[in-house]
Length: 216
Image (cartoon, rainbow, N blue to C red; front, side, top):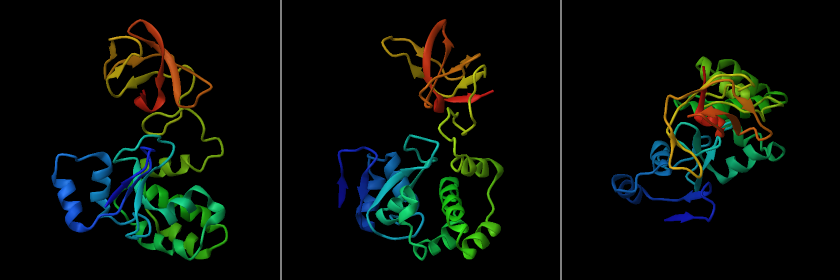
């Protein structure tokens, strides 16, 4: 059975294998379905078969296959509120830290980092853990106290005066025009909203979602 709440970020899944296979092989293949297939309907941190929902790993904000993980309610609650963490529950990271998925690695690393101050076993796991350089940078960005800054698709901080490349076709609000993928916007400005930068493209000044840019 699939239970969907009104919030598009709170899809909750509970499927048996037959229904899962039917869903995956049908015409409704979506980001959430791809994530569910990837984890075989089990939480990507603790391997629970409880109902799951997609969790976007910061600083990213959109549910995508590369930037989200499927979590059970227990893991999600404790990730969002570290004060509620059950130390014994997170022994599960001994397995999930070896996931091949960068988003899972990042989330496992951050949880171990939170736990390591008071738990020697968590520090031992951190010492053993290996991530690619880009994944490590992503993980560390999420631990910054000042993480609320505009960042590009790779999590790199964007600053005033930077040049960026648009990574996908973007419609211009209130117009039929589109900013084409590959367009270079030079000398951007940052705004009060960390999700947005501003600059000129196609001769027009506009705000652009930072995550749809790549710093040059």
